[in-house]
Image (cartoon, rainbow, N blue to C red; front, top):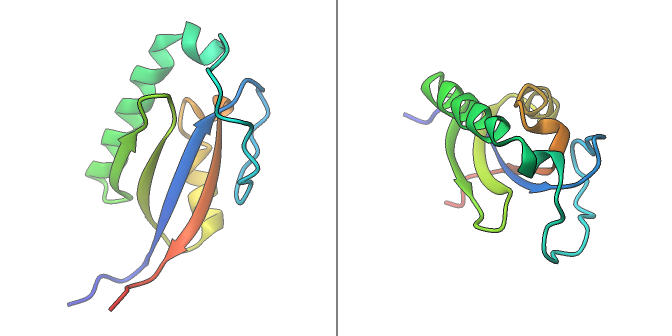
Length: 109
C-alpha cells in the first residue's frame, strides 16, 4: 500500500545572516571556507537541532537527515505542501542560521 502524503527533499546550507531566505532560495553564496558565525560559536544550537530532527523522525515527519562535513545537510520531509515544510523548518532551532531549498519528490516508477 502506498503512503499518502508528499515527500520533499530539503537541502540546507549555513549562512552568516540572521535573516532566513525560506522556501525556494537556491542562490547560495560560494562554498568557500565558512566564516566564524553565531552558528559555529553556539554548539548548543547544533545539539538542539539534532534533538529536533530526532523528534520529527519519531513523529514520521522526517524520513531521513544527513549532514555535509562542511556544514548544512539534506533530508526528506513528509508534508502536504512546500509551505508546510517551510513552517516546519522554521521551528528548527538552527533555522536563523540556515538557508534551504525545498523540492517536491515523485515516485520514479
